[in-house]
Image 1 (cartoon, rainbow, N blue to C red):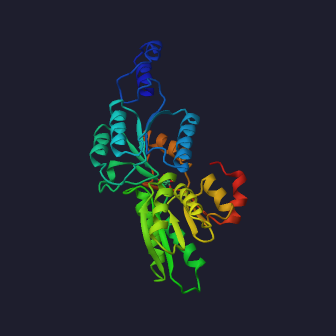
Image 2 (tube, rainbow, N blue to C red):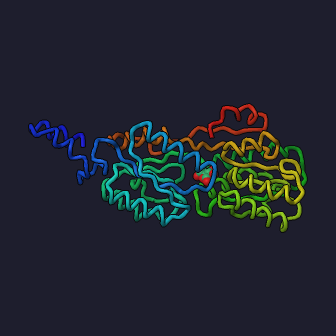
Image 3 (cartoon, rainbow, N blue to C red):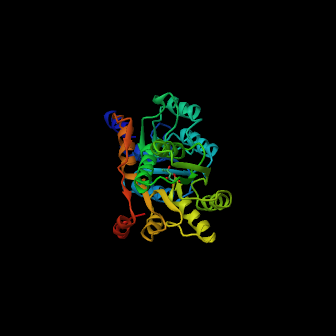
Length: 326
Ligand code: GYE
């Protein structure tokens, strides 16, 4: 649109009529018709506290930066996300960003966006496309690293002990990058010592109810559970309900490690019901908007942008909780 205005000025045309034409300009500058950047964002859903905080961060940052946000909630379904991306292409948004629910199956729709000349930014989760020209950059955490951090805590916790350690694992959404990678990183670290055994590993879909139900089944089928490794806080919190209902003490009878560090998780950690949390930051909004502006300006951006993260013990959680934003 800016280009249009300057062209109109240069050509001596009436600026007023250009500005008055606030409807769809039919060009590639978004549907708002002014010089605002339009961002189409296809979110995974609302499966966890992490996701809620992530959505809020994106919506608030877009508003703060004056970026028009077209937000779609995919309700955990890839087909919904694909539909949303196609509709962003039809609407000719300036930039598309999305958090892919699963890793595979994005090439055709990403190709459509590329052919339409609309840049795509991956946020939070990766895709497994071989053709990396299908997106400009990927902003988010290193999930393998998060899994490793979880494993490293466990190795230290059981240092010098030789008894077998029975671990149950609650996996995230099947096929999702954080579920695949958090499993991989964790296994890589614990495999160095054969006393660590993953005796059951099933999905809880990153949801609290999923975590509770799967843990109930595991408590019935596995005799001596020493450790629970949950791929996110919400599943860990659901599992805590199941453990308590089974008359056991979470954090003591069964040691619990989770990932995310959202407020509810941190509260359970500070109460000793969770033993360790690996942080995964959902506050991607500000960095995302910065990238949106850059790719819209056709500026070069790094192909991978990592989020900075830490880990929390119960003591650290107590300290951090009063200032925790999510
Ligand atoms: O850990 C989990 C959420 O993709 C990093 O998705 C995200 C994960 C997060 O549902 O809570």
